Length: 270
Image 1: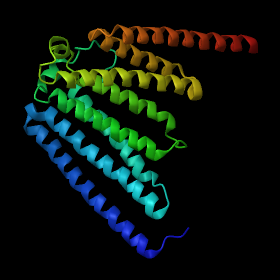
Image 2: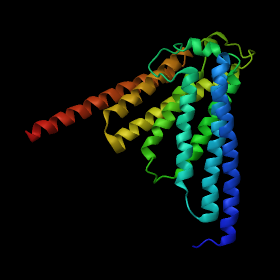
Image 3: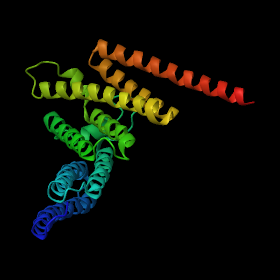
Image 4: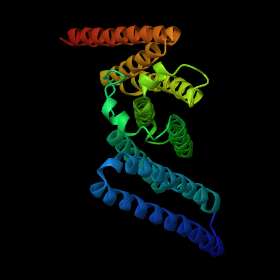
């Protein structure tokens, strides 16, 4: 159905305002990058500030697609793809703050965590919630038939792992009195991370089973479960630790089974 000129004009005006806002946020991010060179001690906080601004940009880009669908009857994948790329910028910014290793012990980034003490557990929880909320909105906006479908497990995995690395588990273990400030924020963050690591692992398993049959995907599913197990053990959640352990054993068996099937097929061809 053709779109009239008045609608096109209004659409361009609305999109133009969003683009202007994005340009302003990008200027702020550039200012943070410049400030990092002269204010070294504040560098982690400039990275965190950049994450907050990138989330605002992503929100606007998702809205731009919604405006396109509403007014032009067209899904604008360019806006969504730009938002998707900005998530990887967020992951890079957070990795600069707390590292993005997944195989290390929970306290491996002690030096980095000590540098961001003023960034409270409540602020970390709110930032993580915001990241996950915008990510879910982006995935919904793409819809089920997108070419990016099997790239989404990576988004879930990276966000869950970086969320884990934002947690100061030394504080979680030492401050167990509900009267302590941020007790419930820490508790909620840990629960979210356990659930999200498990969810991301399941998504990699599904990617393996439904799409790729790539061993690397199952190995990532195992890494995510192992990270979940370490978190669960740290907070004495035996049920979730056992669930992770059982999943790891199951996935390893699945890899061996797939390997044996491939070997049988190879032998049969000879």
